Length: 559
Ligand code: KIV
Ligand code: ZN
Image (cartoon, rainbow, N blue to C red; front, top):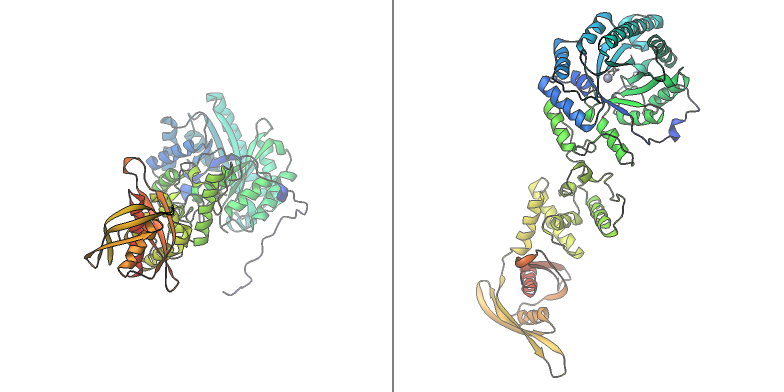
C-alpha cells in the first residue's frame, strides 16, 4: 500500500494538564439507546412497526429510561411508528422518548405534531458543525452555521412553551453539533453556548449537549481530551448534561466512550451490540458489562444476554459475531489447552476456597451472571490440551480421571478431533471415553470370579482369586494368590502366560448414587518397555470394576 500523503493526521486539542487519565468510572451514566433511530437507519431492511415495538419493549425491560425512537419528520413510516407507540400506550411513565430532527422549521413543526400525547419527550435537534461539512456540504461560515442552530432552538422553545401550555407535556431539549470531533473545539463550545442561551438552560432545567464522534477520527484519548476541554471551558457547565455519542470507525468506540466518561461525560448514546451507520455506534452492552466487571452497577440488566441477542437478531436481521464481548457464541469458550487447564483450576479454586470474589483465569466475568452455561466454557478441538477433555468428563458424567491419565485420554481426543476435522461436543467426548475404555472388547474378557480371604499361620492375610476368563473366545479357568484382590488376579493371569505388566496405580470413586450406585476404577499398568497404559472399568461391585479395568488396560496394550 502506497502512502500518498493525502491523509493528514488529526488536529488534536491542546490539553497538557488533562485530568481524565487519573479518573475512574465509579457510577453508571445516563444511558440513551439510539437503536430505533441511528441503528435502524443503518439497516439493510429497516425495522417495521412490529419489530420496533418488540425492540422497544426489550429496551424498556433492560432498564433504559431514555430511548430515541426515530426521526418522525423524515418519513411517514417513522411518524406512524411514533404514533403507534404513543396511542398504543406502549411508553411507561418513567421512560422518556427522544425524537431526532434537523434544525429546520418544517421538520421541527412536524416533529411537535408527532409527539402529541406523549408524557415525557426529548426533542433532539442537530446541525453539522465540522470544518469539512461547512466547506463541502453547506458552504457556510461559522456564523451561518450558528444561525441555523439558534433559529432552530428559538422555534423549538416557542413550540415547547405552546405544547406545555396546552398539555403539560414534560419536554426537554437536546442539541448535537453533528460531526463534533471534526469541529474546531472553541467553535463547538461557542455554538453550544449560543443554543443554551437561546433555550434558557439552567441548572434546574439543563439542556443535553450531545457531542458526537459522528466519525471516529483518531485514538480514543483524543476524544477524551475534547470532552474534558469542552467541560472545562464551556460557560454554565451546571446547566448542561454532557452526552457522548461515539461511532466506531476505527474500532475503538467502546474505548472512546469509557475515556470520555472519565473525562466528564454524564450520558451515553449508543446501541445494543454496536449496530449503526458504517462500522456502527458505540456498543452499550459492552460498556455496561465492562462496568459490571469492575464492581460498578451499570443500572442496565443484561443478565438475559442471549434472549436480548435473539430479539436483536430477529428485529435487525443482523448477526452478533461469535467473538463479540459477553454475547458472542464463543465469548466463554477456551480452545487452548493451557487456558482450559487454568479455567478448570479456577473453578476448582472457587469451589474449594469459598472465595467471595470471582477468581477464574481467562474469564473476566462469571458466564452464569449472563445466564450462560459452564459447559461450553471448555470446548475441544485439535488444539485443546490434556486437561480439557478430562474436565468435560468430570462436568458431564462425573468421571474424575486421575491426573496421570489426562495425557493418554487427551491424545485420544486430539486424534479424534483431527480426524473429524472439527470440534468435538461433550457427548462425543463421553462416547469416545466409553468406546476406548468402558465398552472396549478385546482378546481377554472376564467371565466369573471369586475371591477368598486366606488367613495365614503367621497372622498375615492373603487373597485367592479363582475364576474364568476368555482368551480369544476360549474359556480358561485361572487362579492365583496375592497380597490383595488385584495382586491375586495378576498372579492368576501370569499363570496362563499373560505377563509383561506391572501394576502401578489404582483410583476409584462412585459415579451414581442410590440403589443403582456404581463405582468406576482407573488402572495404570507399566509395560516391560517402560510405557504406561490405562484401563477403566465400571461395576456395582468395586472389586469387579478393578478387574475390568485391568482387563481393559491389557486389551488396550495388546490391541
Ligand atoms: O452520529 C451523529 O452525529 C448522530 C447525530 C444525529 C447525533 O447520529
Ligand atoms: Zn450517530
